Image 1: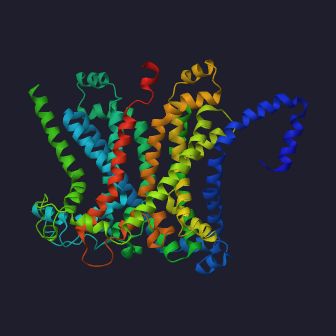
Image 2: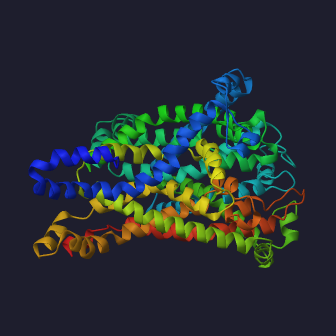
Image 3: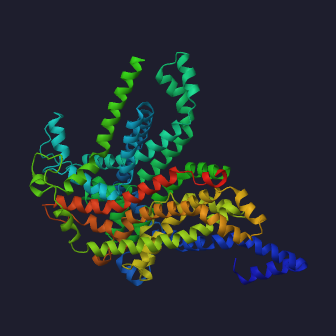
Length: 320
Length: 277
């Protein structure tokens, strides 16, 4: 826009009715001036890095090239190497299973809590909501430390409680011994942290369900399950879809909880998720070219997944 | 009616059980932080700290780099949020008050960018910031946090500005104010609660951020609180659980306090009193 030729063309076009156009152009420029700083920051810190990401993914770029500030072109070799790597495909499958489990537990659990909140007495509702808000406010890094303390094999309280409840003998049980077990703990941690947002949002949406509709259905003799399926659920559907797509996006990209709870020194191909895989193979091993190729695969998946959500939100934004 | 009442009692019991399970980790963190070591390391847990002690908190704040990391976190977060709010507010005014070509594209970008996982851009950002010698400087992380909180701040602030009835602004203009005058006298005070809520949210996001701080600040004297906490347990086999939980509590406190504040802020209608009252 600031290109000199562009200015000349604009000035030339404006010449016949200069004064009027000047005023109009000045008024028209205001919104662009207002958004310019944001656009500038995001161009430097987002658009340019994305461009560099694409370039890096086509280069051999390690610590040596980082110091030289110059990569070596190798075409699509980085992509070929990850797509031929069994670790990559195992990670993809593991991340999908992880995401489905997390999203399923979060949405079903959140919906159950929201429905429960409708049925309890006022003081219990306040108590549960306060508890949910407290959990919601816990920083991820803090939650990881608490989880780690509760599940440590020497004297973690989880082992004690499970043994006392006669679930089995969990005396000094090591939850971090297998990838499945440690990733399950990550899932519990992520779901615990995500439930408050989903439950509180769905409870707010439930209060939009007209009680006459529910009562009418009950008088007609509909069973509770049918009332839920045919009356409540359709009304909740739009917000439920937004929550599902948000959860998919967040859970697909989980990093902090997985990286810190499994412990950086135990992050290993057998417990990789997409983001820990990218971080370990690309950043920690200083193979920035390969890491960029993994990033691009990940960002493409995220772009596809977020399409629905973004379209929906833009529509919501246009209405208001 | 009796059946309904027993039902209600049963649901209440489920609700209380849910409360206990959900809140237990937070309770366990705080109660461990106040317990003497022999109670913490015992094989049979003590549920409530019998002889509460502040020893773990004193230990935690005297660990190396605690005050450094608090200072760094505060500098990074306050500067990043301050700058981001000014920039975001300008853009939000443009979105809420003007129609212009490219507006829709801008809206789409603001929403779509929020979906990008930070880890996906870590490598190019590292290469770019290393090129300009911004790794291991607070400035580098500040700039990253500004760009990270901008999109949702623009979007949220736009909502708060739209929530202000236009008749208020028009009334001010009829009274002879210029658009800028109307803006400063009418819009700004009304939008202040929204601005506070958005800044607090941006504050929490930046304070909690881990991965950028971990990657872009290697020097221990420059690390933030979350990175400091993540290194707390160290590599030794005997973790100082009491200290770790005290440190966790300290890290969480500002976030929890701020979070509870904006929960209230959002619950109150923002302009409810302005027109009716």
